[in-house]
Image (cartoon, rainbow, N blue to C red):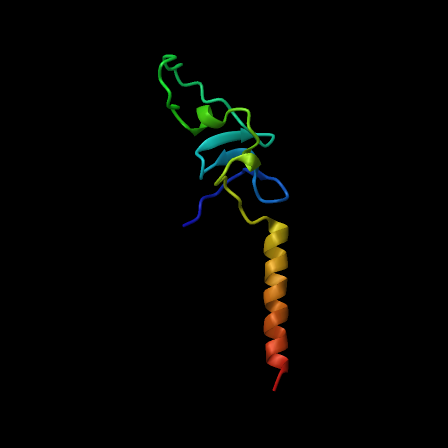
Length: 92
C-alpha cells in the first residue's frame, strides 16, 4: 500500500512543500521548518528531533533527504522501457 500525499515536489523530486518521510521533518519552500518542541537546557548537546537539527536548511542540502519520482520522470522511464521492449520485439 502506498501513501497518498498532497506534497508539492521540486523538479528534482525533493520535497518543496510537505513532509519529508526520510528525515521526518516538515518542509516549506524547500526549507526545513522549526519543530516547536520545548527548548532543551543549554548543556544538552543532542537535538530533540531532525527538525531542530536542520531548521532553516534547504532540504536538498541535507544528507538522505527524500527524493520521489516526479510525473515527468515516470513518463520518461516508461517511455524508455517501451522503446526498449519495442526494439526487442522487432529483432528476429
